[in-house]
Length: 183
Image (cartoon, rainbow, N blue to C red; front, top):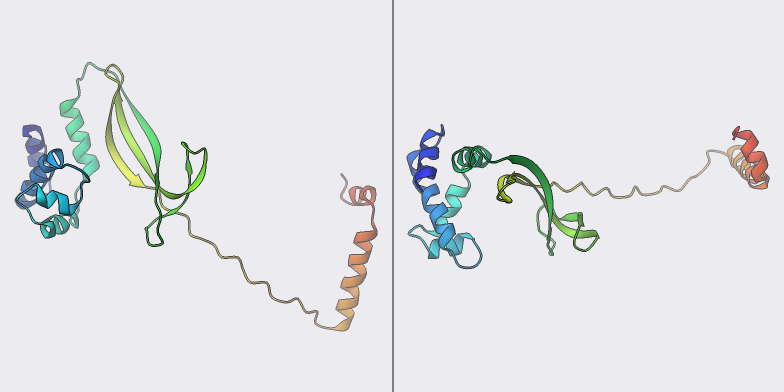
């Protein structure tokens, strides 16, 4: 925890209560058995569920924190590379924000759920990956098909012209159509 405390001291714009909260959060995450949610975090620490909710509404630069942490934690003699990977999370329900159809590599097809994009640093010699940033892939807005309006010609002359043109196009052979389009 000493590395975390030193990084938080160096990061600008973080208040003392937020630093204390983050140290408690990181140590509690290591202790929690089961899902890491506000209820379980409050069971394993001295903070209430409401305190966790309140602090998670505050802005914190996790990518910057992760980068500073890795600069101190990684061996400078090892070779590192940056990687990007997308992961699929199966979700059901009607109110899950961002739920859409994404490619699921395990199933080999698109399925309904969530997708996250992860940027990581991989240490080649140890084959360990360290996440720098995780972002949820936004879903594309669903486009509803436009309603077809009934097509009504303005007058009877236009209607006759449309019928004659349709008949002429239908009576053309494929060879005639190709010569019309210079194919």
